[in-house]
Length: 296
Ligand SMILES: NC(=O)C1=CN([C@@H]2O[C@H](COP(=O)(O)OP(=O)(O)OC[C@H]3O[C@@H](n4cnc5c(N)ncnc54)[C@H](OP(=O)(O)O)[C@@H]3O)[C@@H](O)[C@H]2O)C=CC1
Ligand SMILES: CC(C)(CO)C(=O)C(=O)O
Image 1 (tube, rainbow, N blue to C red):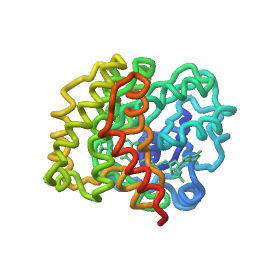
Image 2: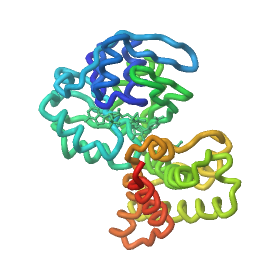
Image 3: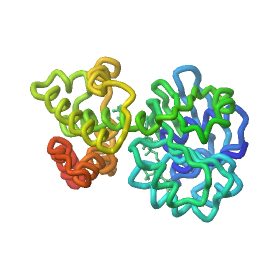
């Protein structure tokens, strides 16, 4: 299968790399530093189970997606519009596009922006990072939950070592992940603490409960069916990932823009539209925006 990855970063290089390793014709579309490294010396895929360097195509040009049957859309949520506009002229209408992104509305936005008939949101359960140009470091997991439109892809993913399942309630699963992000990401970023220490600090569990209650109220008003009790999931995350810093913390530490507008920011915008107060989410969103704007 010809596969294009838009956004050759931590998620794109992992899933694109796994598919290339299974023999598919994969092209990574990304920024010059990563692309040049992959062109020069291949993609190093350092996972928990193996450490291999793969030879695969890489380009800085969205035109490299021409002819792809499958697109993995893996940019951060604030980059969705720009990346989609760049891809738009090069997509075949019959292609299947998977949005491998956090946030709950990327697939919806892509359906409006792109001429492809099949778009599926993917809930991504993986921990990966770019250890350097052309070097992907995988810390664990790697499963996807997809919409029914992507069902035909399951055998291909399974053969590539990517466990995936189809859910009729991907929206609920995306919201469940959004609630974890709303509870942890901003607090971990602002306090610069990993989850295990964060939840030990006075006041933090109570703030998280307020954040979750607001998210649940907005989700219910949106007609979202949450698959499980979000508060139990939130309490569990610090136990399963005690050493983890949120992606928002990592972005701020690297001086990069965060996805906060699509996390707590999304909840507060939907809350405003639906007449549901979201003061805890609003404060966290504003504090992260202030931290993001701090020079250096
Ligand atoms: N990393 C993880 O473990 C997980 C991430 N996610 C989600 O997956 C999504 C992707 O995250 P992640 O892979 O970590 O992010 P990264 O920043 O590592 O990767 C995205 C890459 O795409 C590049 N990019 C952005 N726009 C374009 C463009 N128009 N053309 C070419 N390249 C572009 C970025 O460059 P630049 O930085 O220069 O803009 C960056 O290199 C996010 O929504 C994230 O929340 C979900 C679960 C786990
Ligand atoms: C689930 C969580 C909170 C894990 O770190 C995450 O998705 C993130 O950091 O963005």
